[in-house]
Length: 98
Image (cartoon, rainbow, N blue to C red):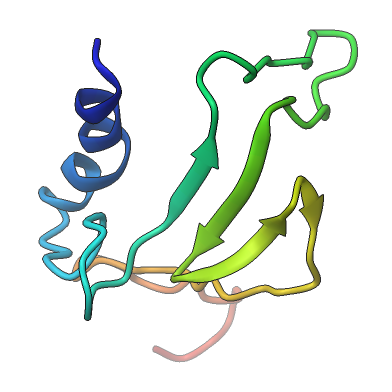
């Protein structure tokens, strides 16, 4: 799979069935996430025994255009938000009136 094809698979295609037409495309006015890395240096370090390891080689991660990883280090930014589809029904506590 080519890098452009992988990008579409991971970002744009998942938004289509949810009708999130303003998501997943790197274009002005859109809400998109992005990852900046060099393909030759990226390496997954997670194992089954120690799964919470950051991969090597990722320089920047942007969520809604805001860096959450910058220069390979986490920032304190939390720009993401939960997206709920039209069929979402909130969980109700037992005994709550709808």
